[in-house]
Image 1 (cartoon, rainbow, N blue to C red):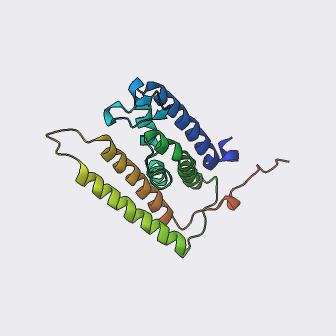
Image 2: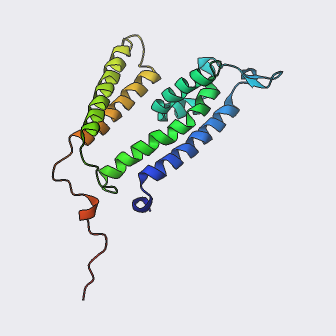
Image 3: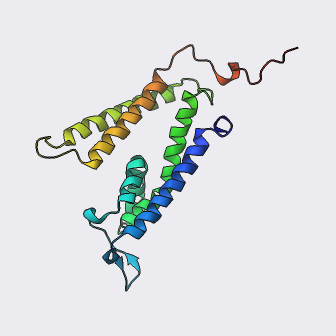
Length: 191
């Protein structure tokens, strides 16, 4: 089934389902004072009261959250955490489509596209962005004697490392890679 559908189709659906489940669970974990009763609008939640389910949703989708926060700040400047999470949903699907497509290339479900100048430039830019993410993550790590690394720092390091791995495999793949067309699609009939 994975070969037929591919990770690029399965992962976005699975992640969106998990994402909305976590949002729903987190919404019901909110403290009562977070919901303004007289206006029925959502008020900002202090960082210590953010539900754990929302923190998990953010950790799984940090790049999508960055895009969702940017979109929320442009379209709805007074938006709260819930607005950021909801505006991030399309980017969650897009993020996991790209990760699924990369997995499809790695597992030879899709033939690798040819190296073009544009692909090389994008991969190099991804390596540079990932490297800056790693550097900023390590610079942001607090002194280990005083406290543990915070969640956002760890998430930055993990997602930056994933970006570096994805771009490096796209840039430095072997030259003798066989495309999907060279794989046998059916077993030869025995006579």
